[in-house]
Amino acid sequence: MARVSIIIPTLNESHSLDRTLKQLAILTPAAWEIIIVDGGSTDNTIALAQQSNLAQILTCDRSSRAIQLNRGATHASGDILCFLHADTQIPDDAIAVITQTLADSSISCGGFVSLMTGDRTTRWGISLHNFLKTYYAPLLFRPHLFVKGLRLLFGDQVMFCRRSDFWDCGGFNEALPIMEDGDLCLRLVQKGRIRQIDRIVQSSDRRVAKWGAWKATAIYLYIGILWGIGVSPTQLKRLYDDIR
Image 1 (cartoon, one colour):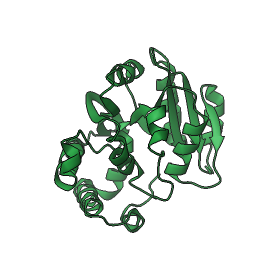
Image 2 (tube, rainbow, N blue to C red):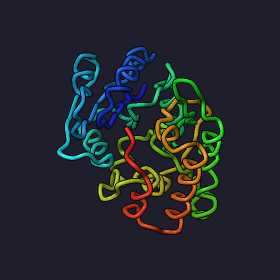
Image 3 (cartoon, rainbow, N blue to C red):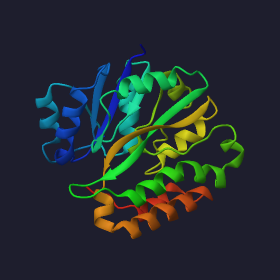
């Protein structure tokens, strides 16, 4: 079986990381390695990671998801890279699902269906919109790539790809403050189809909880449209608050 390296970027994730690491500890089969790349946490994120004795811990001089993910990918030794948010729970058989998906050489990248959940609620509406966005965004804005297999995946969908393909495509663009995942999809589709698999991961609804469902949906839609027509991610970042 191909070896899967899980890479987790963190910044003040003490409220989520412990649960995520406990879930990763029971993966069957286990990940080849788990790498946490911290961007300067001021809470006890690193202490929790050290206590778990499950992950390798790296640090970055500044918080940037693209930089942190590339740092983890540079350190990784697995055949497959899996990029996991600290507030996202994956199924127990995720490693088998990932390796089986990429056993198909025509697929270059995959991701799960993200279901946004909170302590007391499940965000069905916005989760459905995000599911559909995987398909309609590339169909509307990159139709020539859609027919080649482009699907637009985001970080909370737990993207995974072969390490060789990742570096052949140049890795994440470290100049991008957001949309680094969508940008990577545009390059990975040159290596093969991108697939959203029919399995669910549970992601935190903390952003939706702060904004409200309607505002969150509107912001996600607005950012997607602006990005699709070529607006710089640096400008789009102004619409996307950093919420912990």
